[in-house]
Image (cartoon, rainbow, N blue to C red; front, side, top):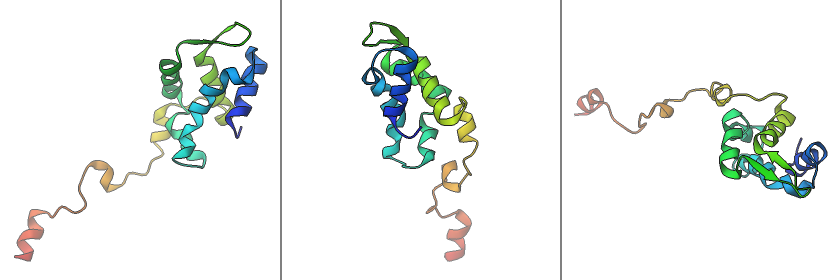
Length: 120
């Protein structure tokens, strides 16, 4: 799905209430589009840990406009499955990163002792 509103409409069909009941949660999952506008934004929240983080932020359940309690985890799982077809782990995403030297904490502008001696 391309837009949080579509996810929210899907939630309303599945759990009752109105799309507006679910929009804050689905907006949160896709807020990372502000940093990276293609599919890679999903690496930040579209995984199991992101779903549990949503629970911490929004609570274990929300009450929709029909007065029904809906687990936030169910909404997160729905969102991620609709986008990816499954719920990956954060490790699934991170394992796809190609390591770069700077990621190891090495300063690129540091001179090694042997470089200093050669210059002198």
